[in-house]
Image (cartoon, rainbow, N blue to C red):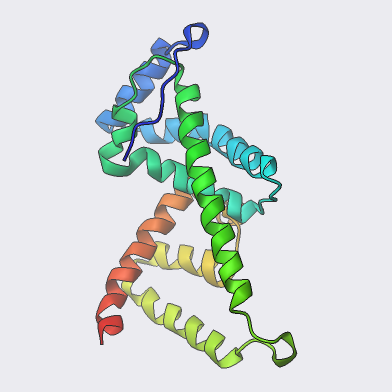
Length: 201
Protein backbone atom coordinates (compact mmCIF):
# COMPACT_ATOMS: atom_id res chain seq x y z
CA UNK A 1 0.00 0.00 0.00
CA UNK A 2 1.51 3.29 -1.08
CA UNK A 3 1.13 6.47 0.94
CA UNK A 4 -0.43 9.18 -1.26
CA UNK A 5 1.41 12.43 -1.96
CA UNK A 6 1.08 14.98 0.81
CA UNK A 7 1.31 18.49 -0.64
CA UNK A 8 2.34 21.29 1.67
CA UNK A 9 -0.64 23.40 2.59
CA UNK A 10 0.40 26.06 5.06
CA UNK A 11 -2.97 27.82 4.96
CA UNK A 12 -4.77 24.72 6.17
CA UNK A 13 -2.05 22.84 8.03
CA UNK A 14 -3.00 20.05 10.39
CA UNK A 15 -4.99 21.54 13.25
CA UNK A 16 -4.75 20.45 16.87
CA UNK A 17 -8.29 19.11 16.63
CA UNK A 18 -7.44 16.99 13.59
CA UNK A 19 -4.29 15.73 15.27
CA UNK A 20 -6.29 14.62 18.32
CA UNK A 21 -8.83 12.87 16.15
CA UNK A 22 -6.15 11.16 14.08
CA UNK A 23 -4.22 10.01 17.14
CA UNK A 24 -7.41 8.72 18.76
CA UNK A 25 -8.33 6.72 15.64
CA UNK A 26 -4.87 5.17 15.43
CA UNK A 27 -4.96 4.32 19.14
CA UNK A 28 -8.45 2.86 18.85
CA UNK A 29 -9.97 5.32 21.31
CA UNK A 30 -13.61 4.99 22.29
CA UNK A 31 -15.83 6.76 19.80
CA UNK A 32 -12.89 7.91 17.67
CA UNK A 33 -13.87 6.01 14.54
CA UNK A 34 -17.49 7.14 14.84
CA UNK A 35 -16.31 10.75 15.16
CA UNK A 36 -14.08 10.28 12.11
CA UNK A 37 -16.99 8.89 10.08
CA UNK A 38 -19.36 11.66 11.16
CA UNK A 39 -16.82 14.28 10.18
CA UNK A 40 -15.65 12.96 6.83
CA UNK A 41 -18.33 10.68 5.35
CA UNK A 42 -19.94 13.68 3.65
CA UNK A 43 -16.60 14.64 2.10
CA UNK A 44 -16.09 11.09 0.82
CA UNK A 45 -19.57 11.01 -0.74
CA UNK A 46 -18.92 14.35 -2.45
CA UNK A 47 -15.54 13.21 -3.81
CA UNK A 48 -17.10 10.00 -5.17
CA UNK A 49 -19.90 11.97 -6.86
CA UNK A 50 -17.61 14.65 -8.29
CA UNK A 51 -14.97 12.20 -9.53
CA UNK A 52 -17.61 10.15 -11.32
CA UNK A 53 -19.19 13.25 -12.85
CA UNK A 54 -15.79 14.46 -14.10
CA UNK A 55 -15.56 11.18 -16.02
CA UNK A 56 -19.06 11.48 -17.44
CA UNK A 57 -20.44 8.77 -15.18
CA UNK A 58 -23.53 8.76 -12.99
CA UNK A 59 -23.46 7.07 -9.60
CA UNK A 60 -26.53 5.50 -8.10
CA UNK A 61 -26.94 6.04 -4.34
CA UNK A 62 -26.01 2.40 -3.76
CA UNK A 63 -22.84 2.69 -5.89
CA UNK A 64 -21.87 5.91 -4.12
CA UNK A 65 -22.37 4.29 -0.73
CA UNK A 66 -20.29 1.29 -1.80
CA UNK A 67 -17.43 3.59 -2.78
CA UNK A 68 -17.68 5.47 0.51
CA UNK A 69 -17.44 2.12 2.28
CA UNK A 70 -14.33 1.26 0.25
CA UNK A 71 -12.73 4.59 1.19
CA UNK A 72 -13.36 3.94 4.87
CA UNK A 73 -11.89 0.45 4.56
CA UNK A 74 -8.83 1.89 2.81
CA UNK A 75 -8.27 4.17 5.80
CA UNK A 76 -8.36 1.14 8.13
CA UNK A 77 -6.47 -1.37 5.98
CA UNK A 78 -3.13 -2.64 7.23
CA UNK A 79 -3.69 -1.46 10.80
CA UNK A 80 -4.60 2.00 9.52
CA UNK A 81 -1.34 2.30 7.58
CA UNK A 82 -2.50 5.32 5.59
CA UNK A 83 -3.56 7.13 8.74
CA UNK A 84 -0.25 6.32 10.42
CA UNK A 85 1.65 7.47 7.34
CA UNK A 86 0.12 10.95 7.37
CA UNK A 87 2.95 13.41 7.95
CA UNK A 88 0.73 16.40 8.69
CA UNK A 89 2.11 18.69 5.98
CA UNK A 90 -1.44 19.49 4.84
CA UNK A 91 -4.86 19.46 6.43
CA UNK A 92 -6.35 16.08 7.23
CA UNK A 93 -9.22 16.83 4.82
CA UNK A 94 -6.75 17.49 1.99
CA UNK A 95 -4.96 14.20 2.65
CA UNK A 96 -8.20 12.24 2.84
CA UNK A 97 -9.40 13.85 -0.39
CA UNK A 98 -6.37 12.36 -2.18
CA UNK A 99 -7.16 8.93 -0.73
CA UNK A 100 -10.86 9.21 -1.56
CA UNK A 101 -10.19 10.23 -5.16
CA UNK A 102 -7.75 7.36 -5.68
CA UNK A 103 -10.17 4.77 -4.28
CA UNK A 104 -13.04 6.22 -6.33
CA UNK A 105 -11.09 6.07 -9.59
CA UNK A 106 -10.11 2.48 -8.87
CA UNK A 107 -13.74 1.55 -8.14
CA UNK A 108 -15.01 3.32 -11.27
CA UNK A 109 -12.48 1.51 -13.46
CA UNK A 110 -13.41 -1.82 -11.92
CA UNK A 111 -17.13 -1.22 -12.35
CA UNK A 112 -16.69 -0.06 -15.94
CA UNK A 113 -14.66 -3.16 -16.78
CA UNK A 114 -17.21 -5.43 -15.14
CA UNK A 115 -20.10 -3.78 -16.97
CA UNK A 116 -18.32 -4.16 -20.30
CA UNK A 117 -17.61 -7.83 -19.61
CA UNK A 118 -21.22 -8.48 -18.66
CA UNK A 119 -22.44 -6.78 -21.82
CA UNK A 120 -20.09 -8.85 -23.98
CA UNK A 121 -21.24 -12.08 -22.34
CA UNK A 122 -24.95 -11.28 -22.30
CA UNK A 123 -27.38 -13.66 -23.98
CA UNK A 124 -29.75 -12.81 -26.79
CA UNK A 125 -32.46 -10.59 -25.21
CA UNK A 126 -35.11 -12.52 -27.16
CA UNK A 127 -34.36 -15.60 -25.05
CA UNK A 128 -34.44 -13.72 -21.72
CA UNK A 129 -32.23 -14.36 -18.68
CA UNK A 130 -31.58 -17.85 -17.38
CA UNK A 131 -34.19 -17.89 -14.61
CA UNK A 132 -33.10 -21.25 -13.23
CA UNK A 133 -29.51 -20.02 -12.82
CA UNK A 134 -30.72 -16.82 -11.14
CA UNK A 135 -32.79 -18.79 -8.64
CA UNK A 136 -29.91 -21.18 -8.00
CA UNK A 137 -27.57 -18.27 -7.28
CA UNK A 138 -30.09 -16.76 -4.88
CA UNK A 139 -30.54 -20.09 -3.09
CA UNK A 140 -26.78 -20.45 -2.83
CA UNK A 141 -26.50 -17.03 -1.17
CA UNK A 142 -29.35 -17.93 1.17
CA UNK A 143 -27.54 -21.12 2.18
CA UNK A 144 -24.37 -19.18 2.94
CA UNK A 145 -26.25 -16.81 5.23
CA UNK A 146 -26.29 -19.57 7.83
CA UNK A 147 -22.57 -18.89 8.35
CA UNK A 148 -23.31 -15.36 9.57
CA UNK A 149 -24.58 -13.82 12.77
CA UNK A 150 -28.13 -12.50 12.66
CA UNK A 151 -27.24 -8.85 12.07
CA UNK A 152 -24.68 -9.71 9.38
CA UNK A 153 -27.14 -12.01 7.59
CA UNK A 154 -29.75 -9.27 7.63
CA UNK A 155 -27.28 -6.81 6.08
CA UNK A 156 -26.42 -9.21 3.25
CA UNK A 157 -30.09 -9.97 2.63
CA UNK A 158 -31.06 -6.29 2.55
CA UNK A 159 -28.22 -5.15 0.28
CA UNK A 160 -27.61 -8.10 -2.06
CA UNK A 161 -30.96 -9.87 -2.19
CA UNK A 162 -33.38 -6.96 -1.72
CA UNK A 163 -31.12 -4.42 -3.49
CA UNK A 164 -31.49 -1.86 -0.70
CA UNK A 165 -29.29 1.25 -0.72
CA UNK A 166 -27.08 2.12 2.24
CA UNK A 167 -29.49 4.90 3.13
CA UNK A 168 -32.42 2.46 3.27
CA UNK A 169 -30.39 -0.02 5.31
CA UNK A 170 -29.42 2.70 7.77
CA UNK A 171 -33.08 3.66 8.15
CA UNK A 172 -34.21 0.06 8.62
CA UNK A 173 -31.46 -1.07 10.99
CA UNK A 174 -30.43 2.13 12.77
CA UNK A 175 -26.78 1.59 11.76
CA UNK A 176 -24.66 4.68 11.02
CA UNK A 177 -24.33 5.13 7.27
CA UNK A 178 -20.54 4.97 7.31
CA UNK A 179 -20.42 1.67 9.20
CA UNK A 180 -22.55 -0.28 6.72
CA UNK A 181 -19.85 -0.69 4.04
CA UNK A 182 -17.21 -2.11 6.42
CA UNK A 183 -19.81 -4.39 8.03
CA UNK A 184 -20.90 -5.72 4.62
CA UNK A 185 -17.28 -6.33 3.63
CA UNK A 186 -16.65 -8.34 6.78
CA UNK A 187 -19.82 -10.36 6.22
CA UNK A 188 -18.90 -11.08 2.57
CA UNK A 189 -15.44 -12.24 3.65
CA UNK A 190 -16.99 -14.68 6.13
CA UNK A 191 -19.26 -16.00 3.38
CA UNK A 192 -16.29 -16.47 1.03
CA UNK A 193 -14.41 -18.43 3.70
CA UNK A 194 -17.46 -20.55 4.42
CA UNK A 195 -17.94 -21.23 0.71
CA UNK A 196 -14.34 -22.31 -0.01
CA UNK A 197 -14.77 -26.03 0.83
CA UNK A 198 -17.77 -26.39 -1.50
CA UNK A 199 -16.00 -24.46 -4.24
CA UNK A 200 -12.93 -26.68 -3.87
CA UNK A 201 -15.11 -29.78 -4.25
